[in-house]
Image (cartoon, rainbow, N blue to C red; front, side, top):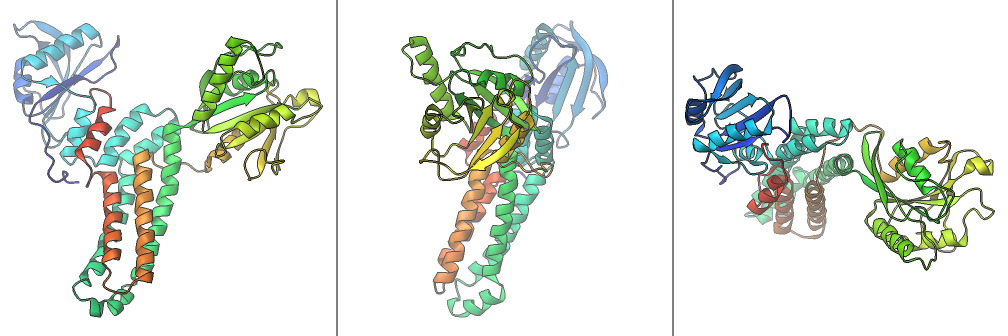
Length: 468
């Protein structure tokens, strides 16, 4: 790809420790910029051959040895950043890495900002913006599925999808804008070009990409699942069962959990944060009241609520349970979990019921019958959580997407819908159609960075780790 128009990387040479800070077997210093030859001359005994790992002694200002390691030189433009790049692979002690980094700054480099190497790769046309973001996503991936999806984006799969849509829009814009100067001739011309059919076809393709991008966003960001219910219905036991370890204290005494306890887990490649909360009941205990307040705070931030009820109780959904369901935010997806089926003599199952007496929203309610003590039915719950999140069985064709990608795809879809309506409702000339198509084009191009504000670029790259 080519470098973004009107954006040039800074002239300074940058350097950073590119491996995690701490004690390790190997540590890497990365340097990029026009000053690399001077740094090579000041640290290494000779110029290493391009792209050949060369053992060398790294020397300080007075010629003293700083470390003994491997040097790699990547001449421009065939490097990660598109500039001259030097990597010094030495021992992983923090003190020796800092000495080596200080020597690089003595020779004219400055300390790199977070994400600056990848930002230069973008500015030099080595990566588009979606690929650059996938670098950080690959580093931060919490599951193997998310890592594979990030790698797909890094290789350009997502960008290729967006690029194909942009090309189709450019061709469509060409037909529409060619008629603006000759409105008396445009009706037959546009009919012959099947403008309406092309608009609908592009809109359909965007809808498909959006579905896959939503799945990728789920892989990247995961879900926050909150466990709520009356005291002693088994919330802590269910957390332990889902996590596979004893994270929360479980006792027969109601009100044991006083604060939110959370655990990261994974279900079929989807990262989840499960939060156990204090039981909900009327109380005069100030500490328990504080815990209940924190329960509702966790509910407000959750993506899914699991409302636990006692399957062994005479009234399996009590008035108190109904009150809890009624207080949940109306748009919050929820499952009713009937726990303690081992005591009730019931089998694990998933059932659907219609809401009663206005409890919950107007949609059908899903119920999962399980035992948090024995684990019976927990696999059914895992499947229901994924279904509630809209997870598809096959995640291999997804790509990690960010909120800004989803916003851009939705904006492009909205502009195309407007173009379709304007094309159907108005007589020529079709200036409004042309403007709608231009706006859709701009929205999609912002994903790959063809049209992106410098302020947004600053925010994106500032969230990267230093050295990348």
